[in-house]
Image: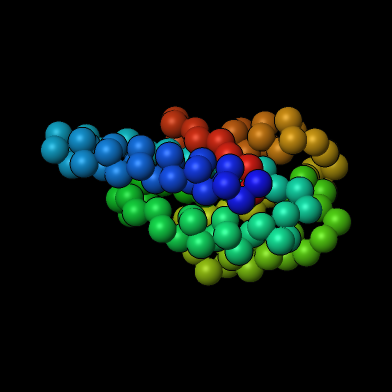
Length: 123
């Protein structure tokens, strides 16, 4: 699981690095939203947060939407704590909208995204 998370975030970071280099050459900047679906990921969230903290892109052109799918552990609390420290991070709880399931988590994240480019990953 950790290897999959690391590989996914590495590919996102690599792609963003190439994109940043390409875009800075043409002065056209792409905005994007990263949506992360989470359910009972308390043990994995510190690795996720560490990886997300390494993202480097133009200020105000990206956001992270963390969607909690009715976690029964401390995941939601940890997500909210992380978001409170990062202005480009938002948390959605499926408990608040009385929904459940990964599909609904992704749907809620996508529908609340403000950017045209959407990147999806798991916690």
